[in-house]
Length: 413
Image (cartoon, rainbow, N blue to C red; front, side, top):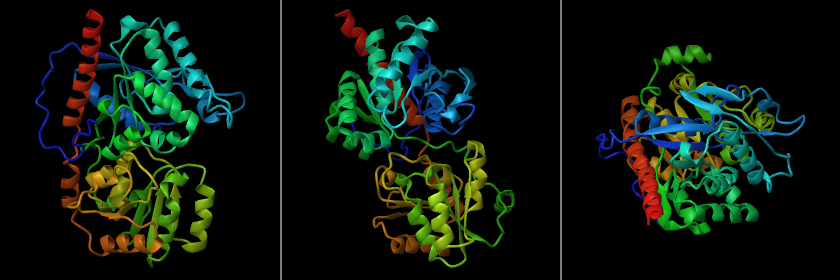
């Protein structure tokens, strides 16, 4: 398994290959922002933008959205085509029956993608590589697209696709078929790559390419200004949680821990099905000290991070959560569960804490230690800056280039 170094950067990008003809990617993912959901799959869009900005990659993005009569209202207003982060993004609809359609989802998605490509007269001559993000249903559907077009395939795993969906037998079987069809597989952490190999994916084709942090977007904001924007008092001590309100994120544990920290507030930014349940728990355990806010645009997160004292990431499983490096780039230390790729971010010398035990007591102690003896914001930011994008982007484009060249050589033979 190509579990290459995924931690801090040790050398800058030297611009090698900058004069090559750009690789033409057909990027397929249901995890991509749209006009109605600007943060949906933002991590996929940000990485793709970094690849494009290198000058060595061009990408056509097809980001299908689910459709079923009288359902998925949040997707109904998504435009069929729009420009996002400089990409021309198409949003065809694919049939997905709520609660019943998971088995048919990859096939329905593949049909919608093929129809869109044919409608737009985009064929094999338009691309060098099929670039899929998220393994199910996206990677499975992309394998069929790659076969139809006769193009090489690279599938990127993100975390819950492997850690959660990969535990479902029929989904795992189809993911394995797609993995063996692909020329290369990308994992965002060593831990995720190891899990992929343990499932039966070809270890020799797995490459670890972690996410980086945008240090120009995420940088400290003046504390007083940030707190005023969020309506926080200057002397408040505030713990922050950012993420989808789903069981995997473990925000109930964060609420229980903060309930034992007298006069400490908790701000949770995110949306999801557990909001009502989490709000009821907060009202019971820490009345008046927990506030829920909706998602905010990516650029505005800088002020959210800068207004708080500690970010809590109590996840049950993770791939490579971007919020950790984003917060640290804003000078805010982190307390995180020791799961998935988190130990690869919060290394032993990090000005942050990992918590092995899933108990409110252990989390209370870890949060208290950083609230009472915080590292300097400059120290925290300097640590995060070691996880930039340049080397990752260079290695990923080199991988794409190698896959395309290998396919060309095989055809010539």
